[in-house]
Image (cartoon, rainbow, N blue to C red; front, side, top):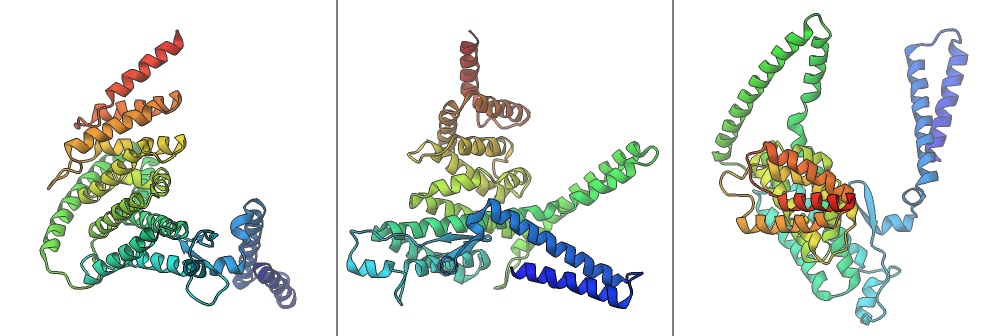
Length: 395
């Protein structure tokens, strides 16, 4: 209603001033006010559509907003019913209508500490302090054994996973910022006479220049890494991305420890943007992303109930990364035993998927595996089994 009132006042202002001052010709300020009025009314219409089709997030009560904490613009309520078998002291904590500590406050505190980890540089001594503080809160909640406190860990870690995943995507996305401008330039050149020949020459020169810049940049990064750093934030994009990837791996392991890995599985199965950029990111960042993908795909064979859609999304998005990723410079991303176990897990998951999903995943795997120098992952057994099952259906 506040937005509606603003739009109405803007409409009256535009109409009255135009009528009183000059009704024949508009000044630039009149056009500007009119455009602001139109944009405001469009905003009102969008809000109305969202309220009609998605009533839950748009009709939050003040009590709900006061008893929730947000991550990437989303609120996660923690107002959970208390257990009837809890002790009187615990019942007092779980009540919302008393003037004292509550489980919501504990959730907000944990979320705050996890968010601070994203902001504090890894070289700072306070980074280890924040990590130890988050560990202490989560361990205390887990040892208590109450479902409400376990849900605090689950919700806070899920929120931290989503936030860190978004920050990591933005960090590895920066080097690609100039791609749109180069594509626009190429289209303009191709529209000229003999533009296709000129465009191919320009693209070749751009590729060579980019390779030189990347090589020089890598050398400068090595020199920068050897220099002593102060207590401020790191300014190198690769260092920031590596820190976020390492934090995301830590959060993934914590979600597994507290029985909430399904939250990470769901979010990782939709991270298509990061999956595409992970093929060309820095080797150290890529190594952490490979480890996270291996851990989550390996957990698909556990006791956690996971939908076929999530399983298909994880394999379809991250299997190409296994084929194209570098093996690591200083150390391998995965050990030989981990690779064998992951192949076994992928084979088991693929065999349980519908035939159409198996075809998509295995066809893409053959294409990626055939053009790379890597011999892993080798899913030939899964491919042969799918071919045999398809023959049996045909007969």
